[in-house]
Figure 1 (cartoon, rainbow, N blue to C red):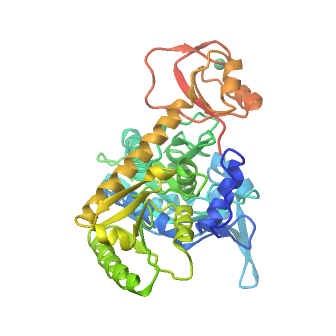
Figure 2: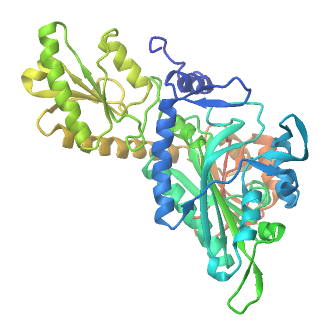
Length: 479
Ligand SMILES: [Zn+2]
């Protein structure tokens, strides 16, 4: 598998991505069109990601629960914008146990409706609020054009659904989660993302306000990496989620929902990968260090393997996710390529010469070519490796930030905007009108990504129509 080279990123980014996902054994195509199989290596990566996120949710008072996958069709019809947004993507179960069902059931595309229904039963008084529940699971949205992790019919994610007494608390929740997503993306996945508010055109079906984190991939397209929504009372009114306030008056709740999916794996691949394959940030990598013993005869083998087992035990003892590749049927060179394809952050080589010198050779996956290799003494190796993993993580983030910032432009005219979004992002003043947003989309294929929370001072003129504008927005082609 490691013998054929990947297409280069500059040659064909899309095909580079598709082949990398298969060859790194992250995922595979399922027999049902539009579905994917996440393979153990990809799933371990997802487990590390979801673990880091789950800890953040719990630290902020959220709890997990599980809601059913099948939702009565009538639930979707209760919220008009929601049903309009999701109707084309619904998969519907019409038969069960060989009989036609009285009411068709929808395979959940998202769970606002079923959870809203349950909340209307569970919430009675202001004392029951806030309700802060998250669910880990999968959802199904009928998609015909598949790209593994980025766009599949069924995908894995978490969806948080919260209910609050006031607008302020619900908005605070939406922003708190957006902060968690950004912190996770930046500090765990080393994907620098921009937090911002989606435009009316781009917001979630049924939301009053949607926010997102957006990342720049190496082909300079944007990837919406997670979203956090404020629903106001839209779902509370559709599902009668009400509470008695302290003066015994019946009030509608204010609700939010928020999600991050296996799409984020796509972001990690496209932000960090190189022409040799995957490059994983150490904090989420399934294997952080691969140890490769090198020997030519039995005498060498005995000595090398003895030291290799000791080193492996030391690394594991220090909490480092280490693995030894002692396969004998393949050459060390094959192993190097194999683990490079899978993006393991550090490779430790141990041969007879290293034993003599009391050191090991360490190669960093994030640096290409010979410059990536150094020698580290065996004494104190685990601590040195732990430090190096921290350094790799930091330098991956720094490189991704530099790349992103070098490719965000401030065009002076609509014509310039049209030119820069072919190979980068534009950060421009926008008057807020849908016509201007639509013109950019129709003529350049770039869409508004978000209006960053961090806005420059003052105001300007809309890049499209020249009218006064209060906000700047990112325009980019997107996945
Ligand atoms: Zn305008």
